[in-house]
Length: 151
Image (tube, rainbow, N blue to C red; front, side, top):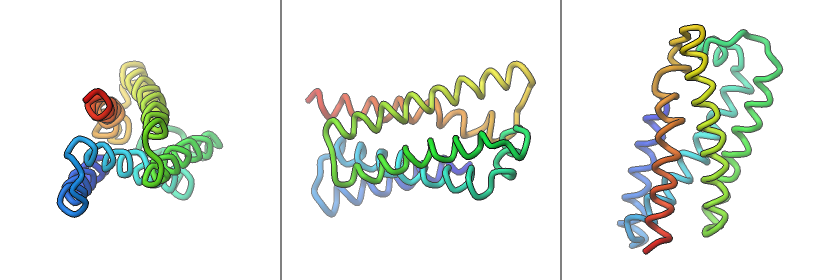
């Protein structure tokens, strides 16, 4: 369910950027989705995988106590740092953050789908909104980036 919160934050931040800073809509929403869905969501995922690893593992349907959780935590933190740094850097930096998030998310989606088919793991953090977020947010980010750069 939490991915919906970051989408809502993106929409609110996008509208604020348009209203307060008079930014055009495409750039405003691109900025907002990068900061929220790469930056804030990456930090949120880091906190979950690092500080609440067993709870998150159970939610995904993974065994608890795996040191792999720390690796996933820091992969998410790297995405979060890139997203937050995008506040001050744009252009190709945004593209790099989008590519990083997209590769990571589509790889995670692939893993969730394989797990869903192989072991029928329909846990909420494996086959719910997280799966859709892993597939669709990169599409939104890439679409907004292309719309922003090709005009």
